[in-house]
Amino acid sequence: MTHAVNPSTTEIVLPGVVEPTGLEVRTRELPAPGPGQVVLRMEATGVSFAEQQMRRGKYYDQPPFPFVPGYDLVGTVTAVGPGVDSGLTGRRFAAVTKIGAWATQVLIEAADLVPVPDGVSPAAAETVVVNGITAWQMLHRLAKVRPGGVVVVLGANGGVGSTLVQLARYAGVRVIGTTSARHHDTVRALGATPVDYRAPGMYHRIRALTPDGADAVFDHVGGPGVARSWGLLRKGGTLVSYGTAATKNEAGNSRLPVLKLFAQLKLWHTLPNHRSAYFYNFWAGHRDLAAFRRTLAEDLTHVFRLLADGVLDPQIAAELPLAEAASALTLAESRTIAGKVVLVP
View 1: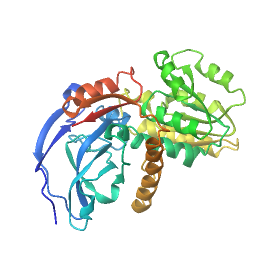
View 2: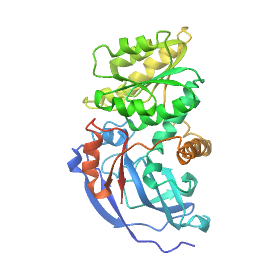
View 3: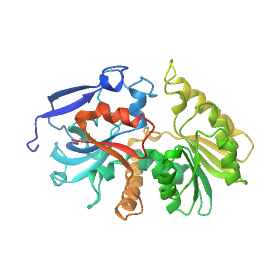
View 4: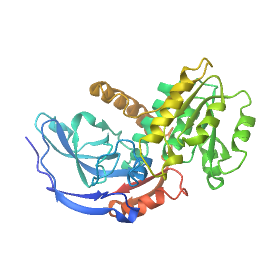
């Protein structure tokens, strides 16, 4: 049985390759939830790097225009479809959607819901959904850095970077984080040693701070600099690349920079040099959907627990209403912020 639900949803639409001001607002009737689905009333969603790439048509496997962006959200279940426990109604959950979350109400598969702990606000929870899962999996499932190790986090002031710094410090790992000078105090407060990424001697400075090499380098930039990141590793170290920010403004095929980077990392990984290189793909487990969902829920539950316990300090750069998504996207792209820009209804 389906409970009563507001029949409409207001969405932000990405109509094509546009500036942030080209985003459109539409209101449409929301279908009743089907078997296994729920309606989630959005309480917080966010601006991630994926949306910044999508508006340029540069995200690796984005859908054809037009579509509603929005990688993840936190909200309350307002209706359930056939076969779904009616006890979910009124409870707060998080979900990763990849697209579609920039809306006041969203149809979600009930199997994709992860409970948000009591006492954690929607905006705080939103900062660690896709960012928290990404940071946790890169640190603990790929790099597997042990207490006492040292890692380098490029973009330590960003949504993923700031979460990664905190998770690493909690695990007893020393962190060197690159950021602009304006964010050095913020990154230092999170527990990392800041290095100015604009300084011409950035890699030499990092090498001076870790003369024996890093146990892991987390690189979201890609491009030519990834070779410098590889050079920072000690024997047995791991490079985790998880983005191609360096090429986001380049014209041409959106898949090519990723494929070139993936090929380079695979080559390095197979060399007999006792170092590892990975390209982190959030959706790597999608071939086995049930296993992917289990792992996602397990890792996000770990991160939520640390957030609820006060171990993680949610890095909210700004909260803006959904209707101001254009301003939110502009702010997120300004390279002036620390943390994540959050959209609320």
